[in-house]
Length: 291
Figure (tube, rainbow, N blue to C red):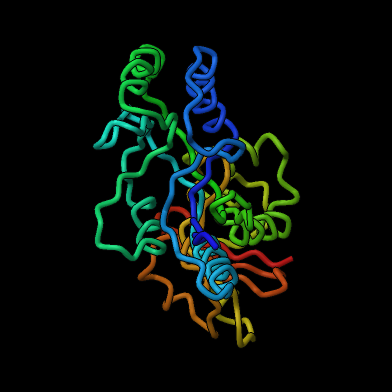
């Protein structure tokens, strides 16, 4: 029986996928079909593992879910077209940004150098060289987005799992917004909180959300009686949604405990209250809101 391997791959959002499909379709339309695996989405291979006893599938899926929970989708810039040594693989290559290198480090345990690439065509070198001018004429650098992880078995190809990056964080942010921003007009929420380059705590800076600010907020927070809360940081919006980091459960804290942080949010597990210390304190914040 032929050996089978599991591959963990970074996947793209619909717009990035469409850009890559457009490049590959140009090759297909001109008679270049190649031997690359067809019927699977474009991807960047992060790592592989030999299937030995069947337990690897569950183990890798668990790691993927753990990584995805701690991550968020991120952008990559496809800056060039490349050909691997040997001349048989034509690909589009993104710049290896920190987030991408981190993903690779979680799934690639070899000592070999890694070149992130989205394969466009696999064929004999003479065919690759014939196809290259078509791609070079069409290709322009573009920004794409990685928003998921795939797990596939090869060969033949078998899709096992797709895990969205940051899905649990998105759910947490949405619960926070539902609890504390529900009274904000839709256009104000869109333009001053969700739109890229804003911050989640802008929910309280535009005068629409009922909250305490400054010393009153500190006093109300310090007076709470609780033993456990949800804590997260950041809240900066990119791709029109706030991104959060370092999600964790904490015990009781005081306003003074949080002053060493930049943008940090403490929230009741049932979202009945929230306290935010901002990087602009004392000019903006801190804020305390109780439903």
